[in-house]
Image (tube, rainbow, N blue to C red; front, side, top):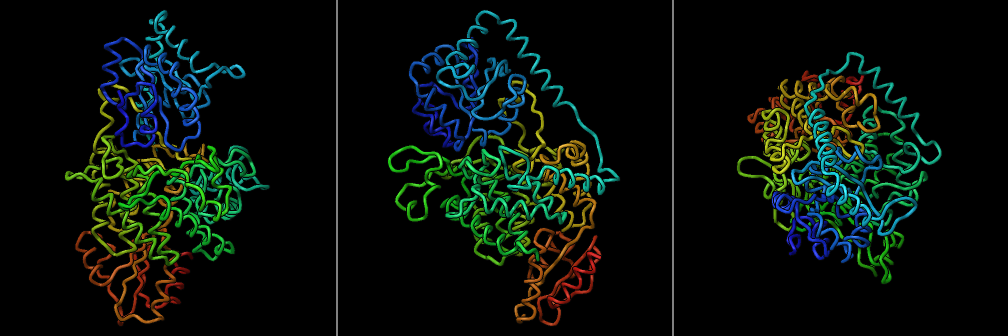
Length: 619
């Protein structure tokens, strides 16, 4: 029975023709396992995962192995991007069995969903002490049949450990010596720098965009050195723009060639920020940002407006399957080949990262077409991923929506996107929508309002919140980022207090492991520095001199900067965004209001006046 052919996830559909009798994630699979009294294989991956493809070809397409699996187990295939909570739960459980966590993640669980063994990729035949997947299945089946008591004890122990970890509620506050500790973080990160090839540490080497954003906000030149090293390295696709997920080697060579939406969204933010600065590297950073934006809008953006999740690493080149072969070709060579497939699954949270980045970069680098692309995506998500009751949908493809529960990441990242887009377009409806999402999270007790995954909840399987953010901000950080921006627009201390509490509870771990907590530490920085806001009120009759005022404001895109007309300013103020109260044009010119901690300087109507205000604010 083919249960995957109509799945939302392209990853699941790629397994639809396997001889394995796959179930999608849901109660039906566990009910079947209980009826047959067999264990469940929960196999987790994603569409651009290279080793997932390899294991699919080697093992899950093998009729003999499929028969072994079908007769002794119930098999569930999960897309970790569609069901991040499921992935997080079983990844935490798998840590009890293997240190080399990754994907594909193959977790063996009881019919009640409790893990008792786990591993990652298994070869089709034994290799250098690593058992074949068939041997793994035999060993698990033998334990299930002959040592059930031990299996049950192991499953119960792991479940109890996860429950205890989930029940722990760390308390904390932003430390009084946060500035000194952030300086220590900078020194630690500088110590990780690969001074020969750029980036952090040895191999494998990742972009760690959140850390670079922290260093940019801190004005640390390590950020520019790292961004330039990456832009000149094999990690970047110079033909079509965009960056690959990571490199196997220290010198950035041998990349894993999948191009992820989240990596490129966050790196666009970083390169645009560097490109809008007076740094000597600005011109090169702008060129790199243009390439990333081109990749996002020409490759990942779908006809309906949203952004697909990733582009695959594999394709067929010159008649043979190749990982990365397409990317080794120049533009002319690529024109003769079929590009690697795009995972067209539209994820609310990841779209939020892309929308925010395009909106800010479009304003900072004066590229209105990027802002228009961001608005198209935002309008699609608002139309297709937002329920009448205000709840979000996690994912869709081709207009069909997933039943997966939306996460904190979805609420926070999309709220941040709506704020970024609203502030650069002047549309207060975007900002009002963002406020509704953040309010819903805070009213629910800083959890996703729609609740947890229904299957995990029914099985009483605890979820340990993952606040780390090596690749992209955690759900907690995403919500806090939006809430802190709302504080800057409204002056409502409820938002700032919520951020202080949430970030304070994970701050100690962030200071201890800064490479994995860049977004959290940037929020600490925002909490301890003066809150700065800029309002630009546009005049319909402004002239060239006041147009220069807008250009002078572009580098301020990473603090709350609102660009509105007189009428839009009134609409924002009427909607409860106190920063906009009384903001009007002066003398028929574009007019800027720079405020620090909600105390605003006299309005200015030219670039020189705004630059002088910036200088006084910094002093």
